[in-house]
Length: 510
Image 1 (spheres, rainbow, N blue to C red):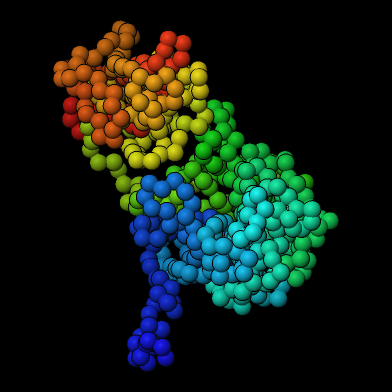
Image 2 (image 1 turned 60 degrees about the vertical axis):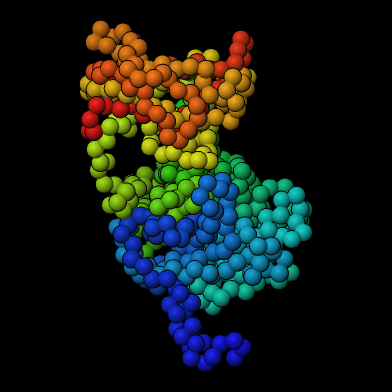
């Protein structure tokens, strides 16, 4: 019996963590949001009346901007509701190196489980080859008699998709497989960084029919995370899109993603773009999955809304998905996100009234890798991605003067201001993002003129800090408040200005 006695071994086998998984009650989205375990890239499926959601586990430490994903896990529930309910989490369903002899550890990215015509469950999984091509990511297939495993390699000779198979191979990032079993036929799509490829598979679920390859270029903004599904006679392709820009219906910054979709009358296309169904969430990445139980369908996705969550510490959520059957083909309606009550509670009284502004504007515009809403979202990160802070960086042509304006719908009283600056260069630099050379705060008076506030203590600090000191001034009443910031450097080139958060303080909490 090794180092365990019979009684201790029996106790170990009876532990819920090992045998039954982790049972928990969810109060709403995200499903598991207490920060104990993070989950991403959901791929739902239904067996009977049981809903299963395969996901990767995000394990990055706070402040680490990288995907640390070593294994897959599965959420299970009976007819669950986005408003909350009972769930079971199977925590260690599979790891890449445990599934495939050719795989290294880590890189347990978006994958999917489907049930084959033989009743078995097939896991199409991302993994990195030990001796891969220029990009080692590949797609392998594992199989199990149970929806939660154990899974074993269904194609021991190697991955079914890589940069070398099927011949002649490809040069893309081979991740994010999505599978549809459709009346005895099997279809596979995958791809990232704007590449979307597809094949039909043989009935054995593993053999790629090389002469069926399609390369999809007609889905506006396609970036990654495809999800292939069928409803009635219409095929739907949901995906993460990031066609950013001021006129984009999808994303305000190039680091964000929305969920868009297209339709086709055949599983291999051609595909027609139809629109956006889920806007930007709190994480920069997005990933769709859809399941139908009875007459209702649900969109499963991930956010950064869990306790201490982030772009690399995401959590699975789901909401009702509906269709407009009066259209041909039926269109998908916009999805309404729901959140647990702790995330939707009224904001407590606070002197910082910046989040109450009805608009936030930059006189020079905002480069698309940054997000003006980050100025007053009350989120401060020690290691932010570009959309987590506002910046005027435009290479060698960053503007000398930067003007940012808050507007409220009614008169507001103010007597303080503070700015948390983001920098990546020292003071005085004319490249990158140094501290600004100077800045002032101004308000619009009753006559419509801009007037400097009358500072009563200290000056305007420019040092980078997540806890900036308050610049106090004589109380004013206004609907418009702005800061004018001068970039450092010159005379012909200036450093950009970067801001984590810009605070506007009232005399009392409101």
